[in-house]
Length: 239
Image (cartoon, rainbow, N blue to C red; front, side, top):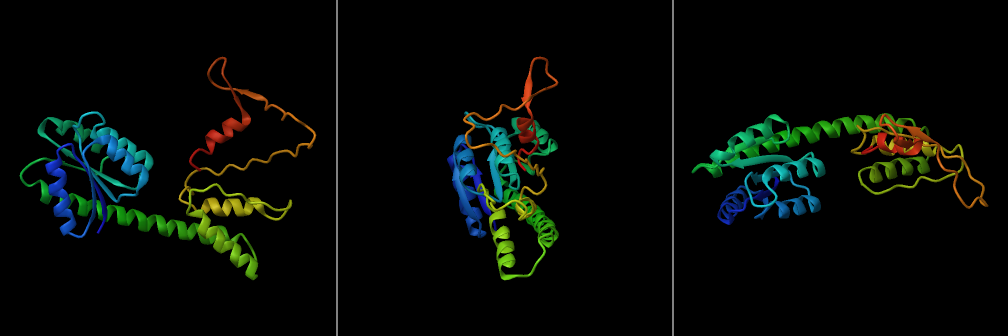
């Protein structure tokens, strides 16, 4: 059973799907507008998002884009009327939407089938990710050599904090393996597929009141400069 978000500006459709999906054991939340759907997506993780395309203000395509950005692992199903059909097909072809459904008298049954297909895909995707993460975790943590209670506690801490989105400070004396730990945290995290960029900052004297400005690097755009630090930050984005 899944955690489902239903978005439609017709309250009757929201209520109809809410009742039907709850009977099947799903956890369901409903909203009657695209802006409300975006807020829900920001605050909770949904396995499947079912949204109408044509709505006042924020439409279903915008909800789809927002879901893809904030919660890419969520499946998105578009519900369409006849005049929205081409938009739904294009959204699916573009790779954003998982499925699309024409509104018809058989809407409830079609939504149920589409959700079942989507939940299967989501489950397989999560299983594959878990297998890759476990393999990467073993490989990453194997680089931290030792079997003392302190090192075992460190490895367990790495496994725990790597699943969060919190900023992590690794501190210690020079040569104690701070970068090794940082790489292990990255490898064990959901961001493991993105870049890991190590920055080695020069030690500065305490009495220096102003940091030395970074040397600018000219970008491909005339008259535009990027600092070396900013260029590396861009490379590490999402990693």
